Length: 264
View 1 (spheres, helix red, strand yellow):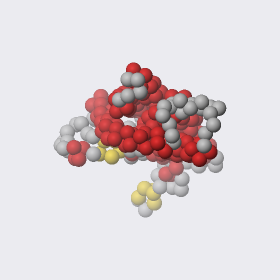
View 2: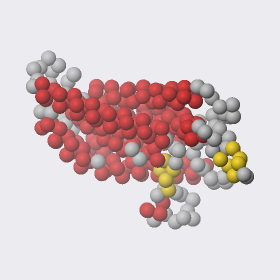
View 3: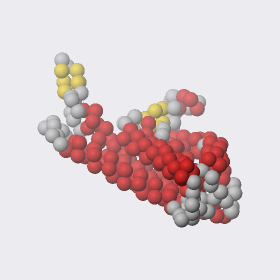
View 4: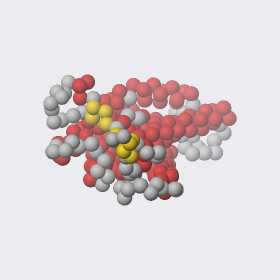
């Protein structure tokens, strides 16, 4: 354990600061990207895993989910190297960042709002020569509307899932006396991502009504399909990141000269 008043080589101190900033930057950048992209597009990956086109169950993931697994990799590495307090601090900064994204989107839409802006926050398509044409600002207001709903859902799911991730990670670290990194990495990530997947899909549908559910489709089947798709995607990458986290932690302990957790 490194005490706050311990004399540290300036080079090592800079390495520790830069490493934390880079990890935090990747985490916060990924978080911002996934919230803005959110549910703007769903990618159907059913054919890649052998699901028949006629099946009611589809394997579809929101484009915003794609960078999501990296956020848990970052918090687990930070938890392992910098400790629980730093990991929790990053989670709180991420929540503040969510609020900032919402404010900028709201303010940008409020300034000089078009007269044709509907009560739902969307612009109507213009009709020219019998064809629908998107007016200036149409893309912004579409993204704005989708991001509002997705970010609200993400905030609730995020704060729950990330704190569960950090708590389970350190609970298992204590129980295993700092050994079995693979266990706490996988269990904490898989548990928290299940919570996140269920929360974000249900809130996005029932609060924002922003999921592309086909007309006439059974709501329960569609929601279950979205939840399973999101979770299995995260589950797959959570298992894969076991090797990268071992390599990263082992390398960073030597590079940063850390034997246990850093104390700030």
